[in-house]
Length: 358
Image (cartoon, rainbow, N blue to C red; front, top):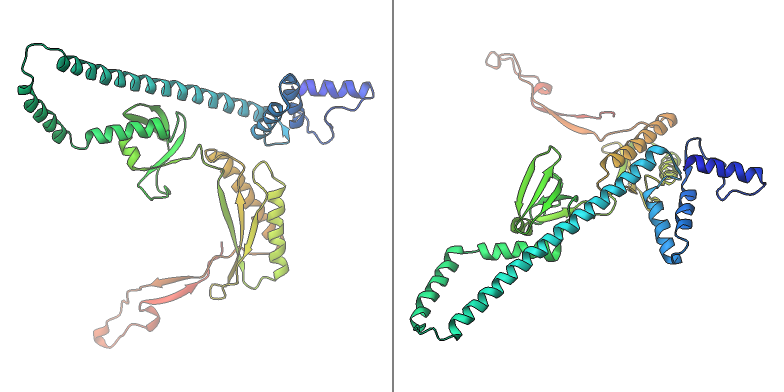
């Protein structure tokens, strides 16, 4: 594709024509994303305009960079094929669940027809004598089973109707009402009618009963929106306001200049100086463009932003501060208090305010 783009630009220049996409500013070995979009829409010229617009939007979402190198292109294509395989596996698993449910319903219907045939046909047997033993047996089975039938059917309905996850999704399973901060994320490997197989990052395979998942809080990371967070920078409280405003503007400009990693900054906050701690906090609220499951890309974007902030503050003479921490030091006095040698007051359990630098 990159060679075809270069040949296309050369042909247009030789014929004195304007190329479909301006090659100015395109690094060597890369392909403009808009040219790839034009190729895709041209291949779908027989489709409707609305469909072509959706395809173009999907291509732009797959390739957030304006110029694509071979590594980015291959990674996006592999991710698309991986998603397609997960979708196919999820559809097959859901079809198997439907077949199991169909078999259960057929068995129940066959049992009802058998009972109807037994009681409606005159077999010459006094069925009145069977009513009490049969009712007692059914009641005993219900008492012995307890909540097992309810839990089985609730788990089945949870998987069939709600469908909280599909094969390949990364989820968090935690207690009801928990936010899942301390929970370990796992990947769904197989979805069954009674249980679900989960695989952790360490390769451990867990089998969770569906009724247990129904009672828990399931957070689906794959279906979640891109993460949003607030970046807080602490600077000395004596920093002039123009320098604080320049720092905020620099962070906002860096975020807006990297649309492949961050969405446009919605807001920024400047808190009142905390003179007791000697710091003032500058907070910028950020929203990533990467999916919640792309931990590597999110961490890389966060690290690049942190490095930019550190370099900018070092170049402008700003020091990254941390709040003053109260350190309680208890020192054992080696003297002999019985001989009139009391411990000095500073060596008795005292509080010292320390202001560390980052």
